[in-house]
Image 1 (cartoon, rainbow, N blue to C red):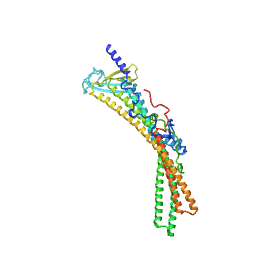
Image 2 (spheres, helix red, strand yellow):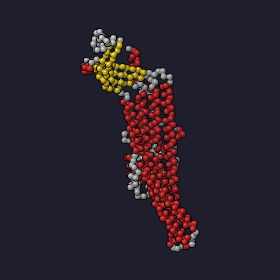
Image 3 (tube, rainbow, N blue to C red):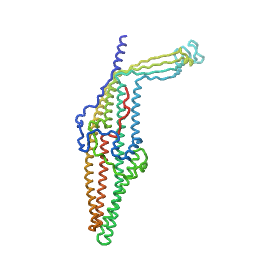
Image 4 (tube, rainbow, N blue to C red):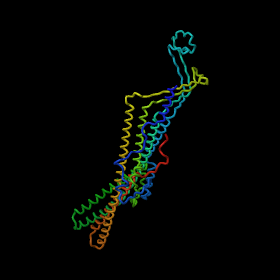
Length: 493
């Protein structure tokens, strides 16, 4: 009696343990540790915490807001990410269910004919002592067995293998949640960039149309002067070359406009052409706010979904070490059968014919030639990889944010410089028109001044679009454009 008691006590103590290291969060980043503030922010950003969701509303463009709403509700990439969350959640629930016994109903019929075995009946179902039938086979006994009942199986958990597996699956569920958030961040940035590019192409087409009209006038003026003998033929050819070049630019801009219309339709989960009516009328590119809130790098690392996914994968890799280490310990399982039955079908309804079987089983791979040790080393190598991937995600996020902030500051300076150029070209065109009206300059000089003004407007509009595009890149790099889930992803052990 002493040995079974000791074995049972040891089993219960072992069942209450959990193998492997406990996850305590990512380790120190060392040289990858970020500074207190962004080093490329400049004076146009503030360390105040940014708004987490709906960054596009700060641009004040209702059409862009409508496109974002459609994309968030209908884009297939988000539906794929959400479906993966559902798959991960059900994996956790399946593993939780594996910790409990399985019970199944079963019906069994057995027909056996066994030579040389006395089962108490002959092959005709009569008493064993009766002589065999003439011409029959000697020493053959027949058996019919009918059973209807329940069977149950249960494996007793040792060393917390199932708990570690659930912990790992919960971490993978968190990574799936973070990947879904990342898909939303990427999507809203793509919609914003495509919208800005579309508006810039529409404005470019308008500007090039005005430039083409001026060049048509320049061609007509050059021809008149050539016919009067006041200019050479090459002036006419030069004016025509400029006109043809502008017409080619118009064709290219129109093709790019259609490409961005198709992209916006696809991003919003609809067929090409479905958003053409909404975007038919050209509009100015929306401008970013004067001051942009960016927070600090520490907040960035907590908010960026790709960093969050890398941290959850690190937690999953830590738990998998415990799963591998638990395989070193014995496994005890129980199988039980309870039913009604006998040698005749009528015995299935006789409550006096209750049969019960209990089968305990223990398995222990105490001699596996290093398989378990190899699995543990493999799991620890997986942890080292997950740690490196986490640091890589941190460095990538920091670089992305600093690069986008640097471009944003540069684009603001460029817009300011091109605004001065446009103002200067406007003054020059105005003065040239005054001189033309006074008869002190030729029409060709006036047309050239107006062409320079049109070119300055085109460059300014392009730089403005690039500025808004860099603002969108800042929002993307900061991991903005999503809201925290209402229900936490993690399921209980």
